[in-house]
Structure formats: structure tokens, C-alpha cells
Amino acid sequence: MYAVIKTGGKQYRVTTGEKIKVEQIPADVGSEITIDQVLMVGEGESVKIGTPVVSGATVKASVVSHGRHDKIMIFKMRRRKHYQKHQGHRQNYTEIRIEAISA
Image (cartoon, rainbow, N blue to C red; front, side, top):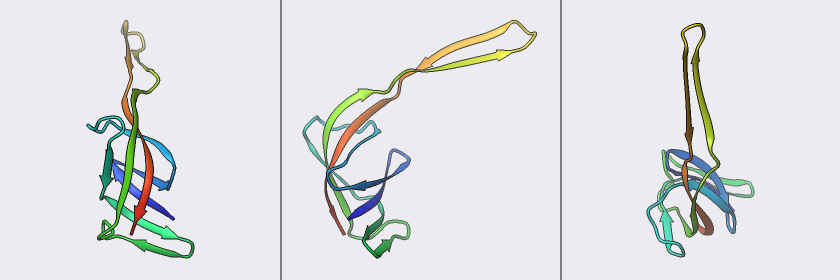
């Protein structure tokens, strides 16, 4: 069984037992969270598509860890104008493990 969930403004296709990195969620490590924004649930040939969410469907997940992604470098330059700007960014994330999908 798989589901398409929405969290942090992004959509993820998840299955039971899978680990994914999502935008930072304010929850303690080891705690259980419930995601109720389930856009689609599928199992084999049967697929339920929500409008916009599937009613009554939830995904239970546990928080594995918090961290920060690798640094990305931002470089802006205007040619012939003597303008250069260097900047870096590291985005925070929460790693979660999908425990159960209920439709």
C-alpha cells in the first residue's frame, strides 16, 4: 500500500517502513505524528484519489532525527558593473519513518 501525502508545501509518495526527509516539523525525536493531508491512497489496481484530500485517510509516522541539508552556494553577478554577491544556505529537515497507512 502506498500514499501521496502533503507536508511542508511538498508532496511525497510513501510506503510503510520508508524513511523520508521532509521540511522541519516541531516534534521531539521518537514521537509519533499523524499526517492527515493524504492526497491519494493506492493498493494494487485500486486507487482512491481525494478532492483534494481522501476523507478519513491518515498516515502515522515517527520522528527519527532532525538535521540540516548540505550547503548550497548562491552567487549573483552583474557583468561590467563590479557587483558580486556570495551567499550560502542550509535548510533544516526532519527525518521521519512511515509506520502505518490507513485508508
